[in-house]
Amino acid sequence: MFLPNGNRVASITIFPTIFTFYVDTTLVRRYKFPYCGKKWKIVEIYTKRDAMFRGIYETTIDAKGRTSLPARFREILVGTHGDERFFLTNSVPVDLGGGLHSSGLLIFPYQEWFVFEENFRVSKGFTSDQRKSIMRTIISPAQECSADKLGRFLIPPTFRKTAALDREIQFVGTMDKIEIWSMSEWDKVRAQDVKNFPSGTEAAAELGL
Image (spheres, rainbow, N blue to C red):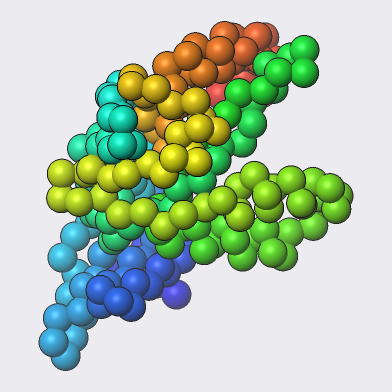
Protein backbone atom coordinates (compact mmCIF):
# COMPACT_ATOMS: atom_id res chain seq x y z
CA MET A 1 0.00 0.00 0.00
CA PHE A 2 1.35 3.43 -0.96
CA LEU A 3 0.42 7.04 -0.21
CA PRO A 4 -0.18 9.42 -3.14
CA ASN A 5 3.36 10.80 -2.72
CA GLY A 6 4.87 7.34 -3.20
CA ASN A 7 5.76 6.58 0.42
CA ARG A 8 5.08 2.95 1.25
CA VAL A 9 2.77 2.41 4.23
CA ALA A 10 4.34 0.40 7.05
CA SER A 11 1.47 0.38 9.51
CA ILE A 12 -1.85 2.01 10.32
CA THR A 13 -3.04 2.96 13.81
CA ILE A 14 -6.73 3.72 14.29
CA PHE A 15 -8.30 5.67 17.15
CA PRO A 16 -12.02 5.27 16.43
CA THR A 17 -13.22 7.15 19.51
CA ILE A 18 -11.62 10.38 18.34
CA PHE A 19 -12.05 9.82 14.58
CA THR A 20 -8.33 9.81 13.94
CA PHE A 21 -5.93 7.35 12.41
CA TYR A 22 -2.22 7.46 11.78
CA VAL A 23 -0.25 6.02 8.87
CA ASP A 24 3.41 5.15 9.49
CA THR A 25 5.63 4.91 6.42
CA THR A 26 8.93 3.18 5.89
CA LEU A 27 10.57 6.60 5.57
CA VAL A 28 10.05 7.16 9.32
CA ARG A 29 7.29 9.65 8.75
CA ARG A 30 3.86 9.58 10.31
CA TYR A 31 0.79 11.05 8.65
CA LYS A 32 -2.19 12.08 10.77
CA PHE A 33 -5.66 11.87 9.20
CA PRO A 34 -8.55 13.26 11.30
CA TYR A 35 -12.10 12.67 10.14
CA CYS A 36 -13.48 15.82 8.49
CA GLY A 37 -17.10 15.41 7.46
CA LYS A 38 -17.28 13.21 4.39
CA LYS A 39 -13.60 12.91 3.65
CA TRP A 40 -10.22 12.34 5.27
CA LYS A 41 -7.80 15.21 5.20
CA ILE A 42 -4.05 15.23 5.80
CA VAL A 43 -3.36 17.89 8.42
CA GLU A 44 -0.02 16.92 9.91
CA ILE A 45 3.23 15.40 8.72
CA TYR A 46 6.12 14.77 11.10
CA THR A 47 8.86 12.25 11.68
CA LYS A 48 8.42 9.26 13.98
CA ARG A 49 11.59 10.41 15.70
CA ASP A 50 9.54 13.21 17.24
CA ALA A 51 7.27 10.60 18.85
CA MET A 52 9.95 9.19 21.14
CA PHE A 53 10.06 9.87 24.88
CA ARG A 54 13.49 11.30 25.65
CA GLY A 55 15.01 13.13 28.58
CA ILE A 56 15.22 12.87 32.36
CA TYR A 57 13.06 15.23 34.37
CA GLU A 58 13.23 15.76 38.11
CA THR A 59 9.99 16.72 39.83
CA THR A 60 8.07 16.10 43.06
CA ILE A 61 5.17 14.04 44.36
CA ASP A 62 3.05 15.21 47.28
CA ALA A 63 1.75 13.22 50.26
CA LYS A 64 -1.44 12.33 48.39
CA GLY A 65 0.46 10.95 45.40
CA ARG A 66 -0.12 13.88 43.07
CA THR A 67 2.54 14.67 40.50
CA SER A 68 2.81 16.02 36.94
CA LEU A 69 4.04 14.59 33.67
CA PRO A 70 6.79 16.63 32.04
CA ALA A 71 5.18 18.92 29.46
CA ARG A 72 7.10 17.30 26.58
CA PHE A 73 5.92 13.82 27.55
CA ARG A 74 2.32 14.96 27.69
CA GLU A 75 2.67 16.58 24.25
CA ILE A 76 3.80 13.24 22.83
CA LEU A 77 0.99 11.31 24.56
CA VAL A 78 -1.70 13.64 23.24
CA GLY A 79 -0.21 14.77 19.94
CA THR A 80 1.35 11.52 18.76
CA HIS A 81 -0.63 8.81 20.51
CA GLY A 82 -3.91 10.76 20.42
CA ASP A 83 -4.89 10.17 24.04
CA GLU A 84 -4.13 11.76 27.40
CA ARG A 85 -4.86 8.42 29.03
CA PHE A 86 -2.11 5.92 29.77
CA PHE A 87 -1.46 2.76 31.75
CA LEU A 88 0.69 2.84 34.87
CA THR A 89 2.34 -0.31 36.22
CA ASN A 90 5.50 -1.62 37.85
CA SER A 91 8.75 -1.46 35.94
CA VAL A 92 10.90 -4.45 35.14
CA PRO A 93 12.94 -5.21 38.31
CA VAL A 94 16.61 -4.26 38.03
CA ASP A 95 19.08 -6.80 39.40
CA LEU A 96 21.52 -4.96 41.67
CA GLY A 97 23.49 -8.09 42.52
CA GLY A 98 23.74 -9.88 45.83
CA GLY A 99 20.08 -10.85 45.68
CA LEU A 100 18.98 -7.17 45.70
CA HIS A 101 16.59 -5.62 43.20
CA SER A 102 15.29 -2.14 42.48
CA SER A 103 11.91 -1.24 41.03
CA GLY A 104 10.28 1.85 39.63
CA LEU A 105 7.09 2.46 37.65
CA LEU A 106 6.34 2.27 33.95
CA ILE A 107 3.97 4.33 31.78
CA PHE A 108 2.59 2.85 28.55
CA PRO A 109 0.75 5.07 26.05
CA TYR A 110 -2.90 4.01 26.13
CA GLN A 111 -3.14 2.12 22.83
CA GLU A 112 0.36 0.66 23.18
CA TRP A 113 -0.72 -1.13 26.35
CA PHE A 114 -3.24 -3.24 24.45
CA VAL A 115 -0.59 -4.09 21.87
CA PHE A 116 1.69 -5.21 24.70
CA GLU A 117 -1.06 -7.37 26.24
CA GLU A 118 -1.75 -9.07 22.92
CA ASN A 119 1.95 -9.62 22.25
CA PHE A 120 2.28 -11.22 25.67
CA ARG A 121 -0.78 -13.40 25.11
CA VAL A 122 0.66 -14.93 21.93
CA SER A 123 4.32 -14.87 22.99
CA LYS A 124 6.42 -18.01 23.18
CA GLY A 125 9.76 -18.74 24.77
CA PHE A 126 8.86 -18.01 28.38
CA THR A 127 8.70 -20.72 31.00
CA SER A 128 5.51 -21.08 33.02
CA ASP A 129 7.15 -19.37 36.01
CA GLN A 130 8.42 -16.52 33.84
CA ARG A 131 4.94 -15.92 32.40
CA LYS A 132 3.46 -15.84 35.88
CA SER A 133 6.13 -13.40 37.00
CA ILE A 134 5.40 -11.01 34.11
CA MET A 135 1.67 -11.33 34.73
CA ARG A 136 1.92 -10.60 38.45
CA THR A 137 4.59 -7.91 38.16
CA ILE A 138 3.54 -5.95 35.08
CA ILE A 139 0.08 -6.86 33.79
CA SER A 140 -2.10 -7.57 36.83
CA PRO A 141 -1.21 -4.39 38.78
CA ALA A 142 -1.67 -2.06 35.77
CA GLN A 143 -4.10 0.82 36.19
CA GLU A 144 -5.55 3.20 33.64
CA CYS A 145 -4.69 6.81 34.45
CA SER A 146 -5.41 10.17 32.90
CA ALA A 147 -3.53 13.45 33.11
CA ASP A 148 -5.35 16.76 33.13
CA LYS A 149 -4.50 19.68 30.83
CA LEU A 150 -1.56 20.58 33.05
CA GLY A 151 -0.25 17.01 33.06
CA ARG A 152 -1.27 16.34 36.67
CA PHE A 153 -2.23 12.82 37.76
CA LEU A 154 -2.39 10.64 40.85
CA ILE A 155 -0.07 7.72 41.61
CA PRO A 156 -1.96 5.15 43.73
CA PRO A 157 -0.58 4.21 47.19
CA THR A 158 0.35 0.66 46.18
CA PHE A 159 2.61 1.95 43.41
CA ARG A 160 4.14 4.60 45.66
CA LYS A 161 5.02 1.84 48.13
CA THR A 162 6.49 -0.68 45.66
CA ALA A 163 8.58 2.03 43.95
CA ALA A 164 9.61 3.62 47.27
CA LEU A 165 8.51 7.04 45.98
CA ASP A 166 9.31 9.91 48.26
CA ARG A 167 9.01 13.63 47.57
CA GLU A 168 11.61 13.88 44.80
CA ILE A 169 11.17 11.63 41.77
CA GLN A 170 12.51 11.24 38.23
CA PHE A 171 10.59 10.82 34.96
CA VAL A 172 12.83 9.00 32.49
CA GLY A 173 12.08 8.73 28.77
CA THR A 174 12.93 5.33 27.29
CA MET A 175 11.87 5.98 23.67
CA ASP A 176 8.51 4.17 23.59
CA LYS A 177 7.67 4.27 27.32
CA ILE A 178 8.27 6.38 30.43
CA GLU A 179 9.85 5.24 33.69
CA ILE A 180 9.30 6.80 37.12
CA TRP A 181 11.93 6.40 39.84
CA SER A 182 12.51 7.63 43.34
CA MET A 183 15.78 9.53 43.64
CA SER A 184 17.28 6.89 45.94
CA GLU A 185 16.37 3.96 43.67
CA TRP A 186 17.47 5.87 40.59
CA ASP A 187 20.95 6.33 42.05
CA LYS A 188 21.19 2.57 42.66
CA VAL A 189 20.01 1.77 39.14
CA ARG A 190 22.45 4.23 37.56
CA ALA A 191 25.33 2.71 39.52
CA GLN A 192 24.33 -0.72 38.19
CA ASP A 193 24.04 0.72 34.67
CA VAL A 194 27.70 1.69 34.83
CA LYS A 195 28.59 -1.91 35.68
CA ASN A 196 26.34 -3.26 32.93
CA PHE A 197 27.46 -0.86 30.21
CA PRO A 198 28.76 -2.86 27.20
CA SER A 199 32.00 -0.93 26.80
CA GLY A 200 34.34 -2.40 24.21
CA THR A 201 31.78 -4.82 22.78
CA GLU A 202 31.19 -5.32 19.09
CA ALA A 203 27.51 -4.39 19.48
CA ALA A 204 28.43 -1.06 21.08
CA ALA A 205 30.97 -0.37 18.36
CA GLU A 206 28.32 -0.93 15.69
CA LEU A 207 26.28 1.84 17.33
CA GLY A 208 29.27 4.13 17.32
CA LEU A 209 29.77 3.99 21.10
